[in-house]
Length: 79
Image (cartoon, rainbow, N blue to C red):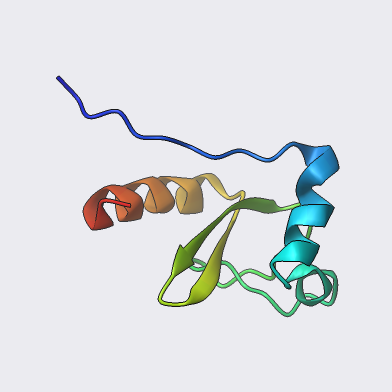
């Protein structure tokens, strides 16, 4: 039997608040954040996921290839 994993989600209406609370909203608006996998500039429109790693917040864009890489990465790291 597969191990169940939890997934935290944020509704679109709450995204801005979350990003402000973790201190990266301005950086995203100024296109200072990049996708962990493809290095594309992250915007509110293309942000797919974020997760903690090594005392930092990593961000993933909505490119299907990056989403797949995220899934593989999280499975490999058992996050």
